[in-house]
Image (cartoon, rainbow, N blue to C red; front, side, top):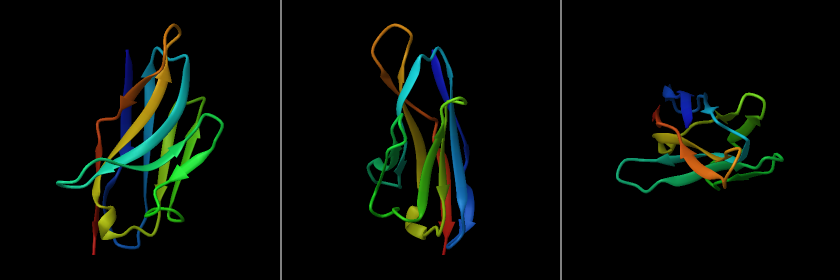
Length: 120
């Protein structure tokens, strides 16, 4: 079994910074893509940032230049540094990891979600 545990998030004023982290544990052979998605109230879940196993990154246009995704392959952890936060960044943030077990194809796993609230 694989489990993802998120930490970070909270309430901050516009212009401030927050950081998120997400660590995978369990039976893991390899982690492919890691990433972050977010879901605002009454909205669909949207991609925020992705990072491949070799460090390639992809960002949503709305966060490019403000957010930075990184990963630690030894710790099975993905991070999201969020700077210059705006009220429209308010959402529940979910981490995502595409994890391959020792025997079998990779499967997608999601964190429990963490609330990020930006006050104006």
